[in-house]
Length: 512
Ligand code: ADP
Image (cartoon, rainbow, N blue to C red):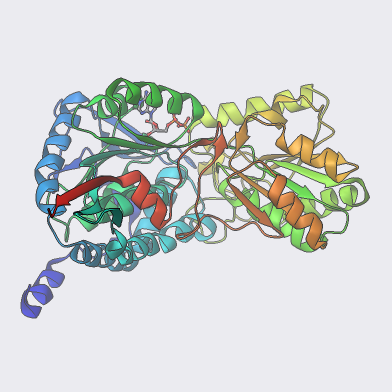
């Protein structure tokens, strides 16, 4: 491509649209297939509403098997030439996508806040801000798609090469849809695959915009996206005979269905499922740091809607009461309000279904005899920040439970809401036993000033992602994925790209 041509192309590119309502309307009733925004084959749509006011945001295209077929056909066509494109050129295009997404991060953040109710300043902008990094990271790894030579026989030249799988189906959830999508499509595309993404019904627009922006520089058909419901759109994508791999993030129940459907076709799957991530706080921990870690780890500003949420906090008896007091004060100071308002720390739950589910758990916890410490609150109408319009919104006050029975469902099950359970313990062994007594094994943290306790805890906590004295989120180059019911396979690293998005082929050349 000549410099002149690229400058002209760049001038033609879409400019950011900072009005999320207008942008959602513009993207309404469309999938993106073969490089074009197209309506559903049936012409059907479904509504998306702003969870803070229940105003209509737009209509999403209602994807079904016919839409899946069109998207997979486009992907099959595009993938052949893409696989023959030099790896570094593929990587260069990924980095270019990263630059475009970086330039559009504010519009993406606003669109995300509008469709999911995640507060703009604390959450949606953070997600949009890290998006580009995934593409730059994987783009830079393109030349690492290497094989090996094997000392098999001096008369034979034996080697392995990494080949793309073909068409990858990615099914994503609504909680951090852009970032979770990036961790699937950036390595899949860099490795030479084409992708068909099925977005979550609650959050179809921001990821569609990401796809539209990337399609400005990617060959048509390489990255397609469909909106629709699980059974009508996700299921035919998994079952499609030309889809060679499924990468899924979502619930354990759906993960199981997908694993079974993939078994019918004998294709590989990556499953990132739920979590009930423990945080173990020893008496000798730095209280301020542990409390700040609980607030960020529990993702209170995301209404707890995170698979790695620190939703079980085991605190040693000597620190327990002070910890609960300090945690309450810190969560209380978070400002709940309109997700699009810069002042809000906390927005809304994503949907009525989740709202009812979370409230059901809070009622159950109270009925079980737990003490619910409610924090923060939506300002009442008439108060500063209060608004009549927000009365219908899916706002749930953050709750810190203490005194729950050990076998409480709140301690065992993933709530996916702003509800954490603090449990008192006496000894380190008791804490580890309780922390590991879970069906899940996604993430865990331990807080202590003692190096030996920290290391011992890190070694013995049963989870795929363990941290000592901090609670960072997942980032490129940190292997991410769970054990037990939390999933199969890892994401976010070079190894994940090699293992999950390529086949290893052995080639033997007879020199005799
Ligand atoms: P959640 O309960 O958090 O919405 P789900 O596992 O139901 O989690 O949804 C995650 C993603 O899986 C969404 O995109 C959803 O549409 C999709 N999905 C749900 N059911 C199926 C299914 N049977 N086959 C394929 N995808 C599905």
